[in-house]
Length: 360
Image (cartoon, rainbow, N blue to C red):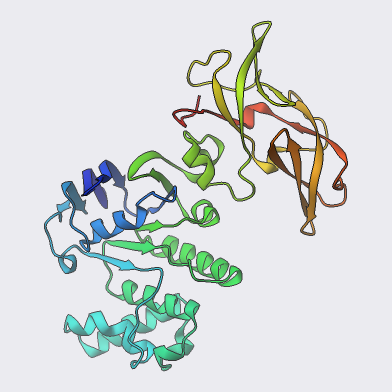
């Protein structure tokens, strides 16, 4: 039995469908990450599941039960927002226990549940502190504790680390992953951060304008994105999406863009292409090397910018009127104004039709 199943879920507005006949299944114990374009509607999808917004078509099943028409409090789900809403006049323990008190749970039971949740998220030392004195990171952990003590079938997290700094975000991400795995929680999380999507999700769903474009394990979607949207939303460094055309010479296909020419001998096409077809070539910055690679192609370009971050360096090369970024070792990095020869395996690239945005 799936923890969540959506069948042809639709949400409309005056200008058309925001979410269009979306089908999705989430198995128990999964941490499903929803990500995608700026118009993915992932946050709206969470609100529809929680019952905070009404859908205009389709059905919502939680643990096999049809909750499409159920009130939010009767769906057995809990939602945590990107900006936590705590009661400032209450202390942390009281904030965590609010839902339990409304359900008239016994005082001794509440005390145990609050203590266990606080320990799981490392905030035991904050239980007596007023909510008004908490940092943003601490407030978010309290909000997650409040959801945890209610023990729902499904947790919905709407970009919970959005307002956190880099170090706080990493710590929150690590603790959330450990908690989810240890307790076997079923979590659906919306995020626009590629690092969150890649490190947290056991499953990933890529959305674009309310339509589901691809689902699978994060590593597979990262390696073989089926659309430009999937490529962009998982790009942790530079996007590296170059416009060009398919060329053909002696029955061999290649990608051409200004001075750049990339052979496609090792590329695995999933759709037929023809010479002259306009395409987009995706090359991850980390797929480049300064040393020759077996079966790889060679690219020589001028360096515009070279930036070191210690262990690695990011170089930006001019490619006609476009730019191409590569990550190389900091000690051997070329400088701005140099000519650099880069090597890459076309088999690790992604090609998309320029019109449809789909992988070819």
